[in-house]
Length: 157
Image 1 (cartoon, rainbow, N blue to C red):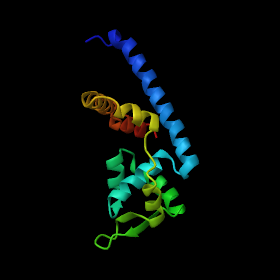
Image 2: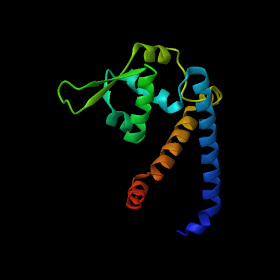
Image 3: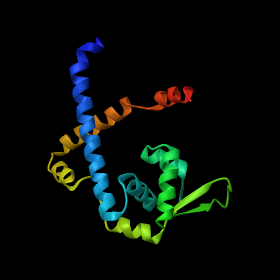
């Protein structure tokens, strides 16, 4: 397959991904304004709400963020009093993260991780269209795996 034949499509994909990224960034700022939380912070709170307590590495794996990024976000959420850290009684090397009652209060207000307009339009699609969009986005995400890029960037440090 000739990569140059797909250049027009790849440029259109990059443009669409930038539009998605920009929309998500704008919405994250709106969440911050209304709830005092960014999208990644809210995503982590949602994950903690589902679990009794969990280690940072597991959170990072579940939401596809680096462990370092999750640690920084947990620091901010701890300062806000929305999560706590505690040593694991069975393995003192592990730190368990737990959502606080204040964190649960925010999640119970049901702030959405996606824009209401998107959710409304998405809900109006037929199920096969919803599945098609989901599988397409998942496929793009899998094609954009970052592991090799992370290895390359570490070589230059």
